[in-house]
Image (cartoon, rainbow, N blue to C red; front, top):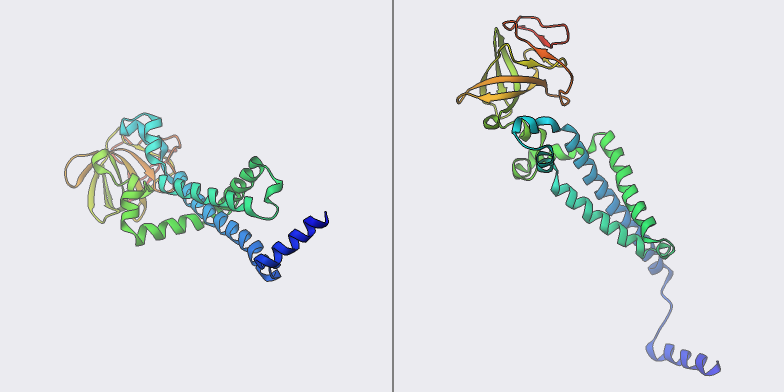
Length: 258
């Protein structure tokens, strides 16, 4: 035992080993937790953006896009944000393993802690609108993001060639609506006895609507169904069919010519 102690002391002297200052220990300790917190924070932001994007989309449009529900749903997933969530989740997990108490917990517990933290805080961010605001900022300031990287509510409903159109009502007349789409282009929307107006729709000037139908030419669009801009328009309703009356009621939407 004495030889071992002597050898250890000589080794310490030869290699110049000395105890680390307390401040270095504290920097390393709290630095690990800061990295974990940053990873969870940005993972939560990513989750919030992805969640807000997904809940704004209309998932039933596969019927009109002539695709299976699975294929259409896969085409809507925000893969960019899903990858970011995976990256920050991995960073949070391995950083948690390196903390001074990380060795006490198994992989399952630390995985649940990392995932739970990101999801819980992500829901909080979503509830206060942070995810939506962040996504709107990116879509506004980074054109490539909104046009190519993501399927947003706007891009989903700005495909007139595929039968989806959205915009703001500018004029209303019997059997016809006029709108300015999200790109500022004017459209004549033709209504028929088969046109379905969802109950939540207020067909009045200045209102934003979503339209399912078919493009006839450069500026004409025949409407099969009209939904409110907010929400997914999944409520039951019936066609307007009565020659486009000035006022619709009885659960069939409302048309005002004001």
